[in-house]
Image (cartoon, rainbow, N blue to C red; front, side, top):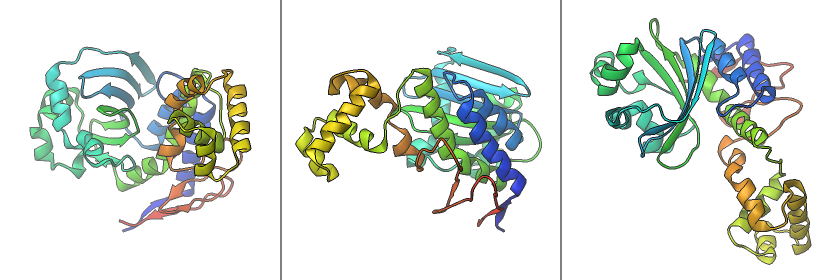
Amino acid sequence: MAETLTEHDLRRLLAVIEDGRYDHPTEGMPWAVLEGLAALVPCDEVSFPEADLAGGHELLMQWYRSGDRALIVGDEGLPAEFWEHLEQFAPCDYPHRTGDLTSAVRWSDFYTAAELHNTPLFAEYFAPGGWEHGLHLAFPTLPGCFRKISFWRRTGWDFTERDRLVVELLRPHLWEIYVDAQRRRHHIPQLSTREWEVLRLAHQGYGNTEIARRLFISVATVRKHMEHIFDRTGVRTRTAAAALMIPYDDTARHSGVDVQHRGAVQLPLGGRMLGDVSNPQPVRRSP
């Protein structure tokens, strides 16, 4: 049966996006996002962890739980066996194994209840904390690392297809919000789409003539874009501009949407877009 989001659901989705855009940036996700997600997808906890899976250490742990919040930067010293179990846990391994960063996955997508209870990660780490259900949504990061939003439930029903649809619809916007928050936190200037294209090619070592040929623009236009980049970044060389900006060049490549900070918000769904914020319509998802 097709999954349906109500007008109320859609308005709450849009509220998460708008509140997240203007909330104060943190080292992780803006708190308004986690609080909004916890209300939108009922759960006991929503978290935003980042870790070096290959190296076996945490980079950041942020969680929101029934009004309580915590943000820890750095490693808490989890044992090596935890990271070994995590790599073997199918829901956590899924984005690394498949490259799929758009699908939200539940524990129950991979295991029956009996199988789940027999996994080392669940038996030794999740079960003692009372966790019974999980829903995870991965975001881009460096190779060998992970960055994701996780929803946790201790008791009750598993996460539903409606819950999955909600977070998958929000995913590109949540990534945009995260990247924009990090740019604001580090005072990184905004570049236009064309300026990003020019800077990427300059970073790869192409000269003005080759950049112009690849982008089908004139050399004079390339020079003008570089001047704008220098003016906005406050540096005067390509190397310095690239060193400042390239680490934050991932919104357009990974979000799947054009970045828009004003006016109507649109949500992508299966190649089409949901309507203007002022008049959201129910959304259906086929199984």
